[in-house]
Length: 594
Image 1: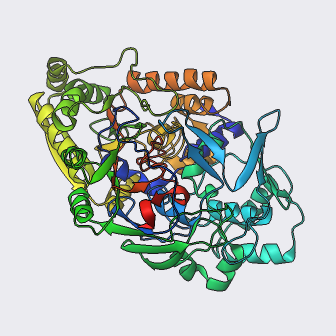
Image 2: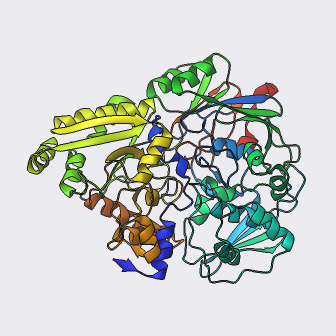
Image 3: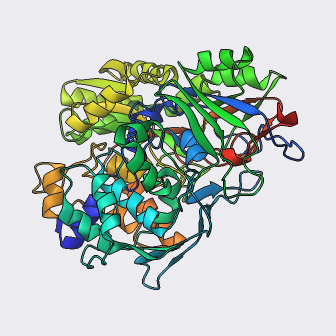
């Protein structure tokens, strides 16, 4: 057991560093044909052309759901709604890659630059001069502070958890700014906590923001593109529209503005004439249409009622699309392997023998071959070939051995398991295959699939035994990364609580951490990539040694586009930030302005 003020900050961070919680259960939908050549399906399209419109089909079970709206501070689906967010907000930073998908890196977008202090505890973000929101007001440092404070305090399940230095006094801010901020926060917000945050999040001048940390966070910048901190909205528009209208039609400085929004159904956008990049966006209009799954999405595309399917995961449909001369298929480098999370806080998986039996009874290689034609990256950890710190093999990892599984089951006098996942066709196929394998090892298995909200409720209530998910991201600590899946105080983890803690809240209040928490913290406590790689290898070894969760294939669902559509993330690969690749919609174009 470790106990310290620093430990409390570290534990708080483990709830989900920059986590985008609504996408948690949906990571189990990441069942595309990954592991292919990053160039696969990339298309050269000549010189970009302006004009035209595009309809993007998004799965209602993932990016096609935005029931809590599009206000970054209150949305529970920020990570799932990366396509919409890219189009509306643009973002302070973007994940970019070379045209072959290599050399992935974070680049400033609305930010002009960023820099770390010598002690790596102060992040200074410099904004580009002259950017305005589509209502004409400036995207300046005060607007960024206003948005960041809201992101921390507005009740989203995906609120960032960062160890801010709360010992610094808040600067003297104008009455107008504070009135605007208080009006945009919940009535019961902890005002003392907000004042502490204002000491750590400062507008140095009109174009400079400083973020003061209590501990070094080597993943902070890498996490921006999946975080609400990346999405800056107009404070003036919020005051004029009010909270409910702002959820429907947030005003930002991205390449497109909202024309019409039917929540979780259809989002219609038009070109932002005030966009800060000359000549962009190319498109005149962009529409996101929610559809009920892969089959409907692909058939809708073939019927000419859509131009792009973002994140097609069904392998048979991907193969059909690859043979269709009317469409192009892009397979980007995968970043997030499948994982079977085991809840160690309750029977049967509070017994390590039960967890070991699941490892030995699971043959992900056979599932990869049978369901995915060996297209997946096999991994024994939370990393994949498209992300940082790739480590596919872990020393001592328990591999498929049904006889050992049977011995453990017999030793325990039997084993009955409830295995769940999100109600997505590919995820259901995987759980069915697992059920067959486990039954052959003498394990009784009940499988189920539920809507996203119900899976999240199970996680939070702790009412689950085993859940098929995915874990990891381009940077393992961001998005639905390893800390979200395995940090003791994360609501989406099944690892043991710290000794002396009855609940995660109790652990946070006492500043208690586990050995795994401390290893996870060490992996972000430096900006040195070699040191981070070594730390993540230690995390992977610890998870394996304790048999917390067997890992399997990693996938990046395919982007399927009609001929004549081009753009980064659609026809040139970008590693997946979370489940799907991010698309840079300001640079998407169609031939002939079609």
